[in-house]
Image (cartoon, rainbow, N blue to C red; front, top):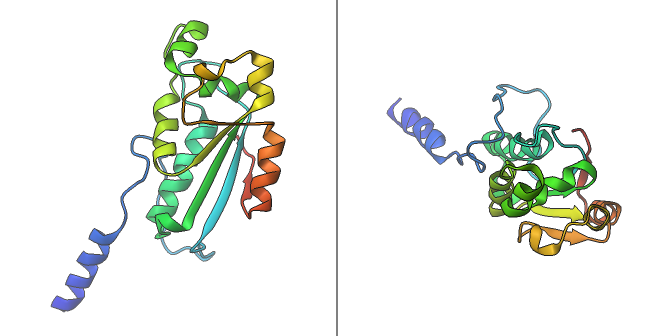
Length: 169
């Protein structure tokens, strides 16, 4: 009995913590009948943004939820690959505080979350067409965000590498 309690205690302690603190809330699901894969690769296509410029983009927060719930379900961090592609209305969410504040009179509410996602290993890409059509300068974009020729280019490339496309916003 003592050994069983030690094993149970170790299992609880050994569980990896949330990757993205403060974002990506979820509810654990016990006893699932559809098994969670041990390895997972997903690319999130985010093209909408909240009309309230002080709100975090729900599509970006979904990436945090994806990471947090899969870690909680026992998928090892090294077996989770995630990418985030932003375009269209979501293009504004990649601006640094200075550029965002110049346009919307407030700091970018997505900057902290995007930084945490980047620090957790998520590849973050903005559509170059969005950047150009909206007139964003490279020094206005958060410095860790990659600019692609287009969202389509990035989506095709990542899907050819085995990433599964997630498009709900």
